[in-house]
Amino acid sequence: MAAVCWQCIEDEYLKNIIREQGEPDQCSLCDGEQENAFTAYDFARLLDPIMQEHFAQGPEVKKFGDDDKEWWEREGDSLSFHVEEVIGQHLGFEDKIVEALVDNEEVWEPDGDIPFFDSSCDYVETPVRSHAYDEEWDYVLEDLKHKIL
Image 1 (cartoon, rainbow, N blue to C red):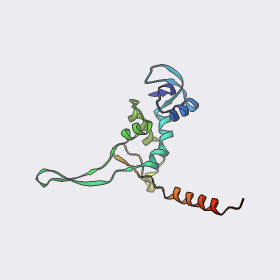
Image 2: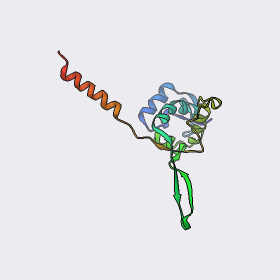
Image 3: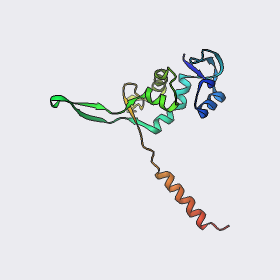
Image 4: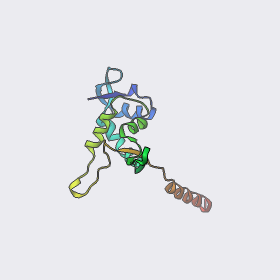
């Protein structure tokens, strides 16, 4: 299985996570047997909540072409594109990480669960809603203004 060691990761935060939580494996980037590496499965476990919080399946939009031809198309980019963007570099096995995301998602479709991850869909970034942060900030300001020391 494809893996990458902490030394080949460019992002300092991710590098530290792999250094602390990685397992011995052959690095796909430097070809060395490394003490601390992450497999596609490890990346999927780490990225799952991040991807679900910050991405959504793109909306279906009607497109128009020559001679009034029309069709529906999903906006966005592939999951592997977004995985690469979140990691911050090209690893070469982003598709394996997407497969692990799809395979490890805990959904039970017979009960009506709808899977979030679908390798055939395109995804868009969801805007960060600052409302919760604004409320917390207002609370802190009020507390500072009226707190008796």
